[in-house]
Length: 115
Image (cartoon, rainbow, N blue to C red; front, top):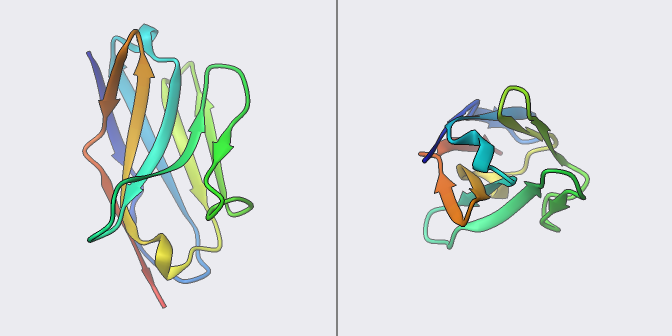
């Protein structure tokens, strides 16, 4: 079992920045890839970015050049630096981990972007 706790969401003006954090605990040895998804009201959950244990990061086209995902394996934490935020980035952001044949999700953190 892996427990994920997100933090760092909030309200920001368009063009501003936020940094999300996700701390993992439990069977962290099972974690291979970690990533961020988001879900806006009335929309399906979508992949934002992923970072594997080694290998290349992946970004959705909508966030390329604005968001950066990073990972501190020693602290079992993944980050999402979000710059140049747009109103369409507003959503609940969920941390995700996969490994040992399981997927785990955090509870989500709200990001609100005012225009």
